[in-house]
Image (cartoon, rainbow, N blue to C red; front, top):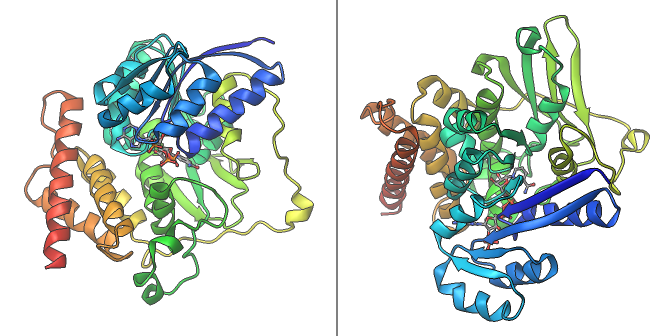
Length: 398
Ligand SMILES: NC(=O)c1ccc[n+]([C@@H]2O[C@H](COP(=O)([O-])OP(=O)(O)OC[C@H]3O[C@@H](n4cnc5c(N)ncnc54)[C@H](OP(=O)(O)O)[C@@H]3O)[C@@H](O)[C@H]2O)c1
């Protein structure tokens, strides 16, 4: 055993959080890693958090919803695990002495704790793409100044990270993100307009939380990932492309100027990029599902249909506008997805709502960078875009 990790999992009760703890158990039980869990955090799922805390005995377990603290205390009585609640407590958990922090809270709620972990120099295994989209350059800069590292967990960015060679910067001509195309890949626009939340979350290849599943169906997930890639790899938007690849086996590709293209392949299982981030810069063995390419037979690729999936165009637009546009796009999308899941708007309204918010805030000049604190600026634009999106939703419903 040569891998020793003190670990905090932010968002331990979610899809990525559960996969992370599963992988850590494999690594520990297989003698690949010595794992000490420092903190686990959740939003509202107090039963699962308590169960995880009893299994892993972290120093602290934190629930964001303060009304659930008495229940968490009760469930962990006599265990020796400290308990806390609230937004600040989640950020404090990210500031504890873990060398490896999984950032897997969903949405912009992950921004503050992810920044905290980056600032203290921990290795941040980054699943929470929204924090990169809202404040990418500041986040990466903070991690660098603190001597830490951000290792992407999104399968596409992990694939690119793994396919980049030494001194790649001037040698890369294109980053190509693959997309499954989601459950509506072959649907007509008219059917998409009547799609239900149940149909949108039924992803063909990946098992994920509800928000990212809807993002996959609208391809807003790919749009957020384009912005994520632009920041992570300092790539101009015109050198970032998307290819639809329904089998989700090729997780992304790097095209080099000499005509070579490097790709990373694997079964669609998020524990693989999590394992890579855990062992980085090395690799660990775990009972990973392996590829059987002969059984799969054919890998296919197609261009995304930008008329049915306008989110890709919106990502390019947000990168072009710059300033607060990516954070506004993300916030408007979060509000629109919640409204769709609550059956208050239709599926196609999600992208058009995001577009309207971007247009309105661009026209009012609110997306321009304003010299002050970058993080405060990101929170301010996030709040403004949420308000604007909610107003648009209320207007369309009356
Ligand atoms: N799932 C995937 O395959 C996948 C792949 C690539 C990237 N990602 C990214 O990874 C992140 C997590 O995705 P997921 O699918 O794991 O989401 P998820 O299943 O919805 O889990 C989200 C986690 O965040 C917690 N949470 C929610 N709201 C919170 C708040 N306001 N404050 C603190 N914690 C909160 C949840 O707690 P409760 O359980 O208590 O609600 C849960 O632990 C997202 O940014 C997503 O885009 C996911």
